[in-house]
Length: 280
Image 1 (tube, helix red, strand yellow):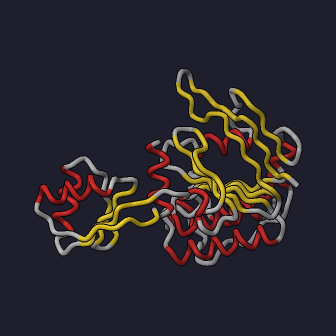
Image 2 (image 1 turned 30 degrees about the vertical axis):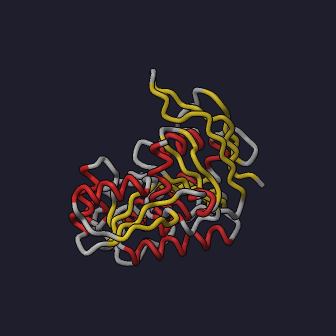
């Protein structure tokens, strides 16, 4: 069953188009990850799907119906801003949220105490937001950067809960900028400038994209030479990588600077494929 079905979804703010002609389907029991740089349109897309923003064009169906109060009761939502009251305790936040859905409040996550939520570390605040989103047993989870700023161990625990919910039949739509998390999704949707520029598994998004790899003892000199030649370079350890670059152009740039180096071509990483797609 389709928990989310968005067709040609578009949102304009005056002359600016934040999301353009996006199609998206999320089935029950499936985790779909939405990737993209800041400003790619991910949050605007989610807010239209939830019914918090009215589309300028296109349509959304949740469980076969337009977004409404009734469909909202079947959704657990964690926004980037968490949607919690910082001056209330974790237990009070959970009680308030539970009352809105007419269910019993969940127990606060361990270590959250009885003080104001705003005094807790961000990781614990996110754990409370996730608990609030789950306590009415939603059929759809919509998670906007749910682990941003969270320590690696806490991130892993949250993702255990996400997979657990999907295993129990919930549909999950999640945005993340952590590539290790993106790889845990069943499918990926890559956005750039408000449009979908790639979708499928990691291999589908990377496709035929490649990077020039530079190995040299003078890696800092190689990096500087490439940058001076207008070639976008990144560092992976002491290797200099140039996604989408022409190998001979890199060779000329290094030769002109007198940097000895061994050059090769390798498949692009998921991060590099994202950069290339955004550039296109």
